[in-house]
Image (cartoon, rainbow over all chains, first blue to last red; front, side, top):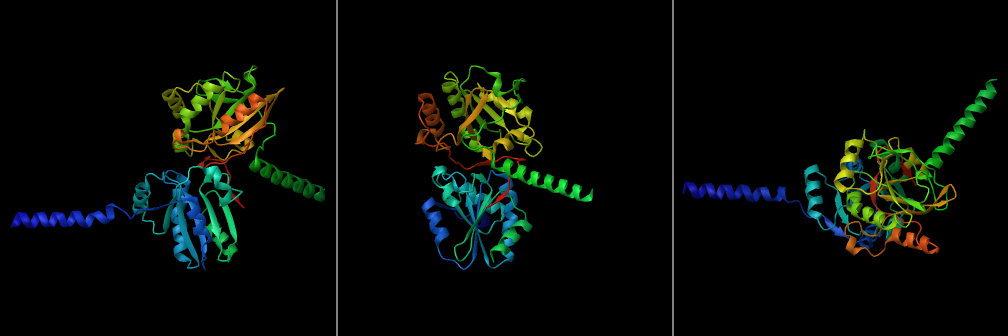
Length: 159
Length: 209
């Protein structure tokens, strides 16, 4: 009986540990699906941040983006991962580890030259990069890392 | 006297703004690319003018630390082995600031070059002066230059091909197609391409558009 109790207890621990060990899968999308996402009507200023788990300046600016979006109800933050589309679980695990709560999509299209200019003609392809889209569809693009002040300044400019 | 000083300050300010704008935009296809003198992992100082017999160069802004570069290293070697005998050798240029990215130190460049047995010079653009002059933004990024007299004219700027992940899934070989066009005396169909890549560390490129 004692042993049985222990087994049940251990099983319980194992099961309860599972949800935190395996984060919900990040949604893998095509460029067409990304465009759809951008074109969907929204009453918020959408902030699409292009990043990757291996990109140090990207990872550095993520908490700033999370903070600014959490404090400002008019902003919706969406992280667009450039990581390997064959391994979305790596991105899920990363988000879990960093405690990132915003929406994350993995844009899986390595034929980059076919779509970079559609995001912005001004984009060289370097990340981090951020696309801002206002409720009336106005777009603003920023290439390079941002601090809290810069990010807030751009958002207030768009209001 | 005071007015003169103000005017001089203004001129200096305008010049500085113009220079910074110029530095950000870098070279376009058709521009003359400046030569450089950078230290290679082999110990020698490397310039484009060194090799009198070349038709041009594949200058590849590269590094040690970027997964995209790692994915392309074997293709960089293959490009050199195919096109150096035809007059277009590769020079790989690492413009990353070792102070910001320890993995990109000169010592680590030597280790990487040795372990991959690079057949081309791998040089360090320590001050990022070359990357800034060229307008390189991310790695790997190719500048294909063609020698015209003592000039090196930019003929192609961009990615190596259209699939970093899997060389066997490539459908567009941008650099090869550009080189073949040059060798055949034809116009290059796609002279500019873009790819997602690692931001060059230390480069002060931060643009709002």
